[in-house]
Image (cartoon, rainbow, N blue to C red):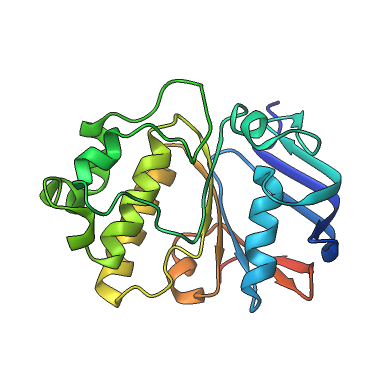
Length: 223
């Protein structure tokens, strides 16, 4: 029997010498879409950063595809098949959408292969194909979010951490992004998404984890 894609037990996290998260326990099975719901953006982001090994001090267990990763660096965590999309829509604004997809992914350290081709990216994100020759500065907020997600798909990661991807999006852009995320799940990706928008996440998620005051209160099905 395969281990979970992600399994967290008794995790305590500090940032800037301040305890932020307490006794976190969470499991995401392969091809499962998990959403972390919290009124506190710091809690949501800190948990994803801790999983990715970014800017945190961690005590407890984080297992990725069965491998303990709590002691690993960001680059070593990425080698286990994980990629993190932060809140920032990082891209070279003066370059075209396609040029950004072809840039080396210095901000997403990884050396394993098997990433999506441009053709596969464009099939999943039709809006990026339509705008592929435009400078990123001319893309909408939703299209820039799609581009940021598409860039990490180029790494070959199969466990995706997505932070507040619906924030600031118009309803039509959010709906388009949700369709693409649903497509990723159907392709077999495991996704852990931090959100405060219940309506955006409801039709995508297999389970919600409710995070408040630095700890997970409970796990709930979307209904």
